[in-house]
Length: 129
Image (cartoon, rainbow, N blue to C red):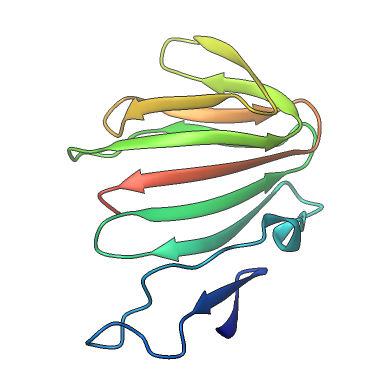
């Protein structure tokens, strides 16, 4: 295997990649992306392709990932990998968000996150924006 450092993890690909030189499989070690911005939120791009995008957001306790939406078709998931907070929606709606919880939503739906403790989330967006 050949390893290449990426966003706090390693890409491991066979010595001989598929025709066209594309990497077909790799692992990202999320422990390596445990970085916080003392001012609120740290964003780390984990993967970006024509099919989907994966981002790691690390929020300090009290930080807000503001409610927003995107004017396009697609879906997203928000997975809490550490900490606690709230998933936010339109009209002041909230849902508890704890380690292991995942929100799945259409991209057009208003969505956001508020951290009550230091919190880490992994967001997957398809198609990528």
